[in-house]
Image (cartoon, rainbow, N blue to C red; front, top):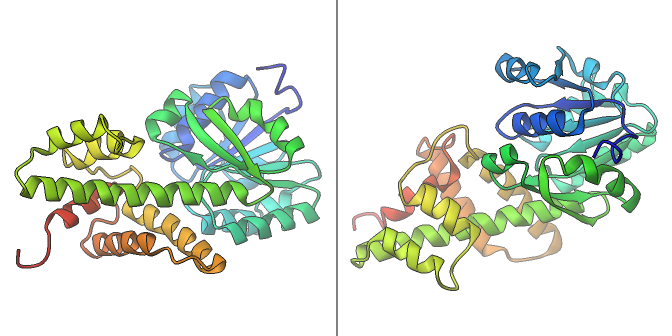
Length: 302
């Protein structure tokens, strides 16, 4: 891998949360390249120092001397803030620098930022990641990239430090389109799984048996085995996982795309209603399959 990433001299990394910290760790351990990392929270910075990551105290210090900067931030709005801050990424951008957004952001904002970076001679790439924190730790994420072929070929060996499945989805913004739709489909399946559990339970079928039987038939899926069996079935919905609030943010991007393309995404609107109800119930910070608890209560009065 070292031969493949020789073009880069230094990596910058901004955002060391649930996904960002293990991604940054894999980059540090597997590429051998120097990394400058920044986060508002001191704990992940302290942990990464032992992996040889150089931690800094500002966005500007990340940008300085970095050929490539990865962003792992909670929302597109925060990506925009980091880019437009007085001493942010756009102010420090230099010709040839590449900035890669690993989070899920709106397509229109992604394309607008790409145009702004391009005006400074820099390149903005959308490369949102999919799968779980465990996959981030194992380096087996799925990544959906929006870029031209040349940039994709340049980035692929580095992305391979934390991902096992890497897909170029098309030009700028297309990575976000695919990731947003990935999440939309996932959320709709979680609703179906939750409905099946509630109906089956009220009809006298043990939920564990139900999910095991479904996993052996045509209803089997990643969502069933992970979100269903590991969260919905035991009723475990921790915080610091992919929360209801994050899920609704991503689904909002999908609904925006549906409106723009003239598609009646009524299934996604139903999911949005459940997510809104969970937030209203005080569960916004919990792992998003917590909506199964609301679905399992049935109609009022039953």
